[in-house]
Image: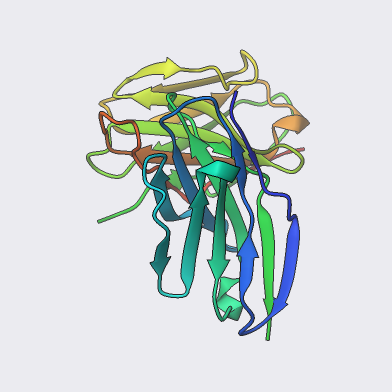
Length: 113
Length: 116
């Protein structure tokens, strides 16, 4: 069985602070894919990144960066110099051999001006 | 190009009535998924289509729920005899096809269903 845990239910920061959202996953499959999605107040899930289990290289996209560590089964997401527009619920998700995405419970990020 | 679209965006119905929710996937995407997002249950997978067939229906919560997809495009999720616990946001996603299975699912805006 697959499981994704996002232990941080809510995080509140002040603009320009850096913030890291944690994601820990469980799977027995050796091939799998990890995703992060953003859900702003409008409700639509917006795709941010996909990583496969064979690629542990960290990735940076503007103010966003992702740290994938198989040794700790973690795929953490860092926002540098946060902005009010980053306020949203962020979901980490896992896809293995089946079709479905298994989502974590989400982390509500609030960035205050 | 256009993203995934869903209709209606909001639906209020009375307990016991049937409802139909529609999803238009991204053009050319062969795979289509339905998920449900509710308070306390998070995001739950319901059903997966590849073309017009549904190889994975294991997430449908009861036999009151059914879905079909025609022409390899539009999908309809039907809930019969709605119950209050069916109140949720129903999200549709679509993806292309990769042999590796690592395709990204792109989501629509969802249909917010409220059963009174």
